[in-house]
Length: 364
Image (cartoon, rainbow, N blue to C red; front, side, top):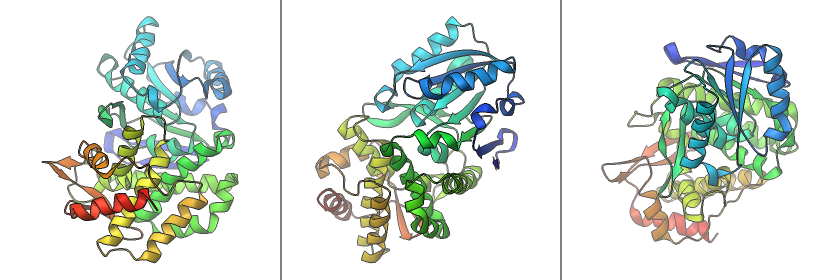
């Protein structure tokens, strides 16, 4: 088992990564305020793994209220949030009950937001079962739901007590989900860890073949990068760099998700296409070479990811991007690359170059 820590003073917590951890319910016990949890899962992952995990908890005397939601980004909304609250109220869950998110990024965000808001806040544990959630969304305390005008527009920062990532669950992921998670893995190499980017280029074929040791290494190195960034800028308040750098490709990608309808494109797919737009814009600003752009493109393709976005029209992209959370005082701040492994926050990209980058990456 690999162990990392997210250092946030009194809110610090461990990330445990390894095989067979769904059978290690004992790892949760010291993090529970009382022997009672509300386990939130979905209709896809629940039937595969939830019974096993619930059984392990119950063997240790933990009472479990299981809440199963429909699967998919389209259900990351107020209705699903209220279903969690309704079930917890019906089960008479109190403030000592720990909410356990058992699933992918949608479940983690929903369950975390429910924990942040139920009786003004109850403890929360992340048990991510997809690559994307293990390397990104389970770490850092961002929770929330989508709004028709923008992704993750309603939510809260609510740190978990523990992240328990069983890499065995990655073996049953649909290929499309594995690829989607790889977009966030590649992101870490692009924004701040050039040696990791080189490692990914050397090992992508093995990763996509689901080599267990390689996947565990990728999860650990991704989480180490995110933990370091979150520890330095928990609430994304740094005006230059900081946690915002984790959003490479996300402003463009969120526009794709909202513009196409939540769930049509997986988050990682949209981020991959958005990363190409950010990379192309960085080239137009003179920061990357054409060879750099091609290098990124090839790695995304090897991961089974899209490198072009849907043709929503430049005006539609820009309108959707104007609702992004990184807009401050009407100025859109984009995460771009000064070089591979070196991300920056930039608010002064010429509108014509932004439009040209979008246009290029929708018709490449």
